[in-house]
Length: 164
Ligand SMILES: Cc1cc2nc3c(=O)[nH]c(=O)nc-3n(C[C@H](O)[C@H](O)[C@H](O)COP(=O)(O)O)c2cc1C
Image (tube, rainbow, N blue to C red):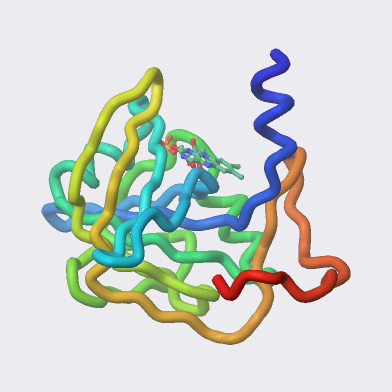
């Protein structure tokens, strides 16, 4: 369908979204992520309403978003395999917790530890708005996703005009 092919032309970074509740944790690869507001700090994430993570996000009231580095392609691949059973610990990668109790990947390029601010349903996905209660980042290069393949950064272009 033209819609899916067109959407695949939007290059993005890659996150792993995670939540935990009652001793059960789950992580999935997610690219439908954006920073939404600076004050207060909010992010948004679109989650498949038929997937397993959204139930844990609702129950736990939190979501952890870890931005994958170029060295974490394997984690992106394993965390996108459908039907993995949520478990007591995350098999895909070593994790830690910060404030909310959401799992965060060790070695990620950046992470956002979020309380759920709102969940709204749109078609087959839900938009999770997360209030960022802790965040961190490290030096390194991102994993990228474009046209259904993983990529690394290419040539840097000129300076941007606006200071974002
Ligand atoms: C590159 C990539 C990006 C993805 N982005 C999202 C996303 O933003 N939201 C989402 O719900 N699923 C996304 N998925 C699909 C989930 O990773 C996949 O459906 C999930 O691992 C299914 O887990 P489950 O069977 O436990 O629900 C993406 C998959 C890949 C390969």
